[in-house]
Length: 95
Image (cartoon, rainbow, N blue to C red; front, side, top):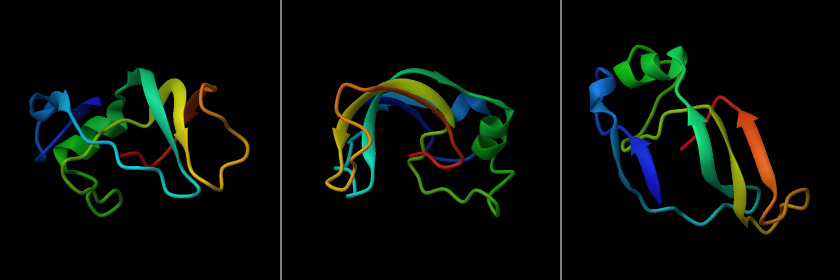
């Protein structure tokens, strides 16, 4: 998948756009094909490394907590969504 990601902390200039491998979802997870995403001030602080104690990240890290898209794959325990469902979210953890 194509993604905006960082491999180190820094200014917004460290955000790269490139291909990343998508892992299979855990039983209670879904994979969403993102169609729209936003970067907000909290994301920029995470990218800069200011919030490492609150939001620890592993690199490469995909910033962003607000997005919408289409469910691509569901985990074996997911019953409330199906592939093809349109979804949107605002959440504290992504990746």
